[in-house]
Image (tube, rainbow, N blue to C red):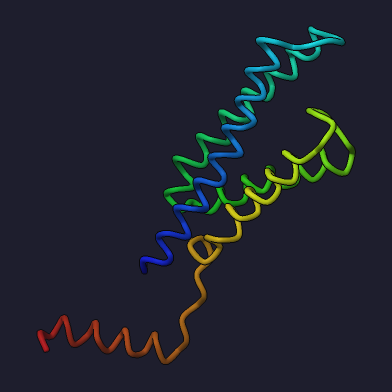
Length: 141
């Protein structure tokens, strides 16, 4: 992989890890200091957010970094989740800036490395040249 591709991939998985960590931290805050309203519901939501953040982060740092295609598809939950929150004006918060930030981070994390997960098929000429080179290498010439 070229240096630019390595850098793009590093930025991508870090963006997704930040989204996962942000969700995890929100969950911790909701469990520890649920605020006003239905405290039990807020703690339950916080516990769910801890799980979502933990699983998303684990998917990012393990199979996503190994370039397992299923992990790339699974991470599309992040932008869908945050767009739904933004469109529905759902909590947490009332300013919704964090939702836009998480949408941008998750889309960057998924679109920057798209060619790592789905490489362009090589042309027939490239395949032929590769086959000739492989035959020459086996023959020692």
